[in-house]
Length: 113
Length: 113
Image (cartoon, rainbow over all chains, first blue to last red; front, side, top):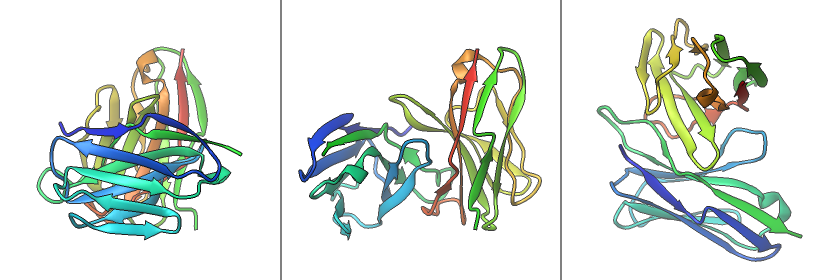
């Protein structure tokens, strides 16, 4: 089946630093999504990307849909303590037997004040 | 304004016991799904439903049963629990299959001893 490779697995950064994480796939997706999971909670959608090459921002978060449709990147600028959590990428294709989200394994972010 | 409600929040089972994890949504979403989250594995799809009376298997369906008699409810049944089913289980719903706007419940942490 389809697999997403997300890296890095974990990050330990100082408050105020910028963060970058990425996700790659062996196959193409029509939509790339980025979720954040706080401890003890379910994932919450941060950004959705619909078009190859698209660059979308949500506050301090910026995500890009790779031109090959096989990858996506998430950047967090000027990190703060509440950015702590697990970030998941997810890919989605429409139609046929597809239409279910495929998740990466997550990037665990720790921020030192 | 409840969104997706999962019960119980925590559960300990003995090997061989059966139980049902409950999931209910009040958003009139057609699509509902169950994921399990294991350390370092991300979220893996167990079963999903595209509407009342229609269910299908995901990536890791073995040992789990589902049914969907109403739009609101999508219970997950473990017929004979095994230690390998120790995990955190998340229910998610969306307007329709292939719709990215998944709303997740807060999860059920299950331990099988």
